[in-house]
Length: 239
Ligand SMILES: Nc1nc2c(ncn2[C@@H]2O[C@H](COP(=O)(O)OP(=O)(O)OP(=O)(O)O)[C@@H](O)[C@H]2O)c(=O)[nH]1
Ligand SMILES: [Mg+2]
Image (cartoon, rainbow, N blue to C red; front, side):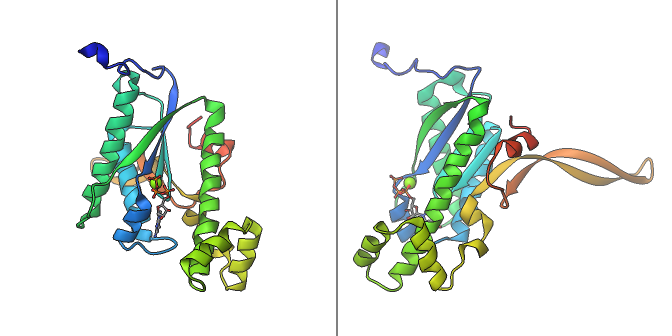
């Protein structure tokens, strides 16, 4: 019967880099069930960071980027011999378990993420993450826009109004309501990056009877990322 497993040999080239993008399934309903704060729930963002850290520790990627309910994982050493079915299913289910595990609260429905693989070359890495970051910014403007409109109109009218507005119009609307998007937290606008960073550790050396400086590669959650460009990824040794 094994010949019926027609997709089992589908593989990504083992000596390449890939990005795996996970996206929460029906997180719109989940956000309602969990009563998440609108437009941004800090605890939800922390939970997505916890999931990202678990993914980092398990699959040793180069870099992770998360905003809203999505997580992009840049892998240079490809697990499961490159088998697409394995990569998509195991990593997405691992993320779902980590989410449930870290949530520590009764949830009504099992959590799931969908998953897709994007083969990537170094020159496209900054472009990919900038593309997702632009999406984070669009998401931010819309989230604040719809939140403000819903405080004034019913849901139907608010949705109709937001669909007719350009980003510039939403900025203006928010500004008139006293919300300046320039002043909101960086992570809400630009997302959150998780990567390894050299950290200076000062420890006391008993034998030598003096302080000693060493460097360790520590996992770093960056809430203050710049607008992604090539230099950012060069500086943190990704490309
Ligand atoms: N209230 C609240 N909701 C959030 C937050 N972050 C993400 N969400 C929800 O997550 C959804 C993510 O969008 P999508 O991925 O397009 O929607 P989805 O319901 O997950 O649909 P599928 O991905 O197609 O299964 C948003 O529409 C929000 O409802 C947050 O901080 N607060
Ligand atoms: Mg989703």
